[in-house]
Image 1 (tube, rainbow, N blue to C red):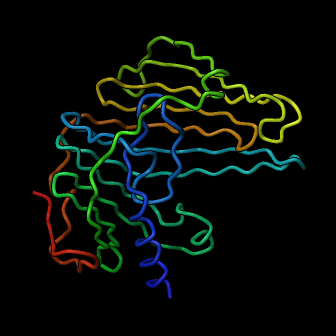
Image 2 (image 1 turned 90 degrees about the vertical axis):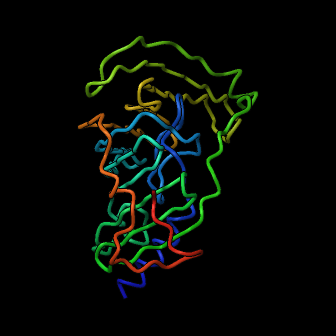
Image 3 (image 1 turned 180 degrees about the horizontal axis):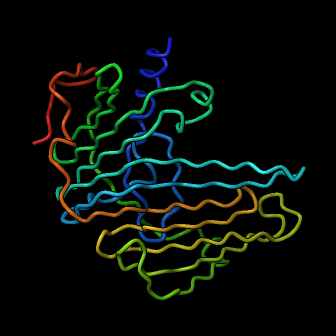
Length: 244
């Protein structure tokens, strides 16, 4: 039963392939093989790190809901990524099941993605569709009611990061709210790693979310981390394609 659940979650996870948040991007939510949103393949900036996303909500009755999602992240100089995390972090379906850890590999060079289950030595494969950069101007109402300010620079886990804070005011009645609401986003972006290494968001509708990178090591990860081990059985579309 557990194996079928793992396989099902692995297959669902392959749908959400994306890169970490770009500068000023939204907070992460680990719902699949890749957290965050779509973006360009980042080359020439290899590193590894631990990533934790902490969410805190205060309910109307005063009860607190606190969740922490952790994973280990690797990126090589060609833009391949590897994430090691627990399937229990993927949603309510797995919340009451003691599931083993899984590994997600995205290889934009070969155009494939893998979800690996070390417990069963199987890998679910999907063909990559290429990375796309999301663009375009923000929504008019959001742009009109947004205020962005610079927070300067500081060192975050050994890397230099540039900070910005954006406050968005949602007028009364726009989303059924009786009074105006504000969301505050604070992002610390590393030009060297080309991503935000510290991200905070406060929203009265969803609570507070903080994503942190720790134990950042700026060296090329071992190439074997981005390959499917030879003794794994690959399930999915297309022939076996190992990262080269």
